Amino acid sequence: MTTTHRFIALIIIANLCAVSCARIISPTGGPEDEKGPELISSNPKAGETGYSGNTLIFSFDERVQARSLETDLVITPKPKGSFRSKITKNTVTLTFFEPFEDSTTYSINFANSIQDVTNNNPAIGIGISFSTGPYIDSLSIAGNVKNLYNQEPVENALVSLYQLQDSLDIIKGSASYYSKTDSLGNYTFQNLPSGSFRIYSVRDKNNNGIADTDKEQYGFYADTLELSNSLEGIDMTLQNLSTEDLRTVSARSFGTYYDITFNKAIEDFKILSGQELIYHPFSEEKIRFYNTSRTFEDTTQLIYSVKDSLNFTLVDTADFYFVESKLSKTNFTYQFTESSPGILDIDTLSIEFTKPVLTINADSLNFIRDSVNIISLDTSLFQWNEYRTEVKYPVTAETMFSTNSQSAIFDIRSAAFISVDLDSSKGQQKTITKLLAENTATISGTVTSSSNNVLVQLLDSRTLNVIKQSTEKNFTFPYIPAGRYQVRVIKDINGNGKWDIANILTNSVSEPAKFYFDDFYNTKIIEVRKNWEQTDVNVIF
Image (cartoon, rainbow, N blue to C red):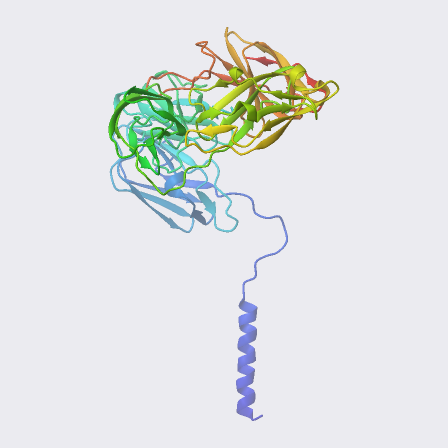
């Protein structure tokens, strides 16, 4: 190697060493930084009055970044126009394109939108209030938001406060004042002026500031809030109830059927004028008609009325007709609906069908008690619903089961049921067992309530589906399978035997509900096993 080559090699090695020595290495060891940024100054200052600018500047004790600032930042009352945000090292700048209102107190809350740049630790409780007038408003409103159906707190619900003179609500437009609930469902409005207000809440999934009642849960406080002193305990529950006007979406033939479809679930449907027709609710929003005359293309005007869950009634007409079609008919099937895992001493068997039943072949329906004892069903005891899509049949253990036998077979032969489409049911043998007390459990308790009428509901703990219901304050749910349950009590204030939920259009509130809660185990779940009796499921409400 020449002297020149040695010199070049030494330069390269020296440079590599210099680069290596200059490399910054993150410190290792020690506890991880879990502390969020802290606000060290702001312009305007917290509590400042007479502010006339349109830019807000917040300085933190470390470099910060923003996450979901546009959706999580809460500014009340809501300023006019929009704003631009800018982050430079440890400073957040908000520039508003419209001036703030005169003589108004504004509150800014960043929620969890400001974080440090190293570990994404959020700045907690960062916010200020300032006024464009000579003083800071000091009144407040606080409360809690729960889910109506499970009575659990709702986190991150939008709570909207409207001044009464705005003539707006959660359906018509966004509010000037708004807040968000925390993990316990609690919310607070601070630095409010005196006045009259209405308050609402919504799971605002699309962040548009209003309740889309056909797909979002919402709620409201029924009374107007006269704010001259700070208020607490302004609680609300969120529910599902579409306030859209009921309307017919379509009325047309589908295959060999004729369907009338509505924009929302319906409660009742009646034909006011037109020919006698067979129909049934094909879904919550659809009525399906069947061609029993087997004629096609003849148009008849049909006048009908339909009612929704708000008790709004729509009267409409349809030019009714059937067409020939190569589309396959819908399948004709049936299933047993069981309220218990077996038959009690006195019980009812229920069968649901996918289409209305036109005729029955009685000799194809039998109970097989054993190899020599076969009992035909008495079809005169069949109890059909109004659409002939469900039938109930009263039974007793004495007639169904042989001596010393704990089971029987419900034998449904092929073509036992003929549908309105003239297709036949398939054969099926259903084993029916005798329900023995030692294989089941019992849940019982007492409701102490000022309400004269209550509904006590036994719920599946996973789905919250109602399994059984009682109207007795001293209630008992016997013969239930081993499993996990909850008990919900509803004040049936109007005594109509059903749970009436809030209607924002009539400003009527939901009938109150409360769950049984086991204070010892800190749970709403009631778990029972076979041959188990759970007593003292007591609710004070």
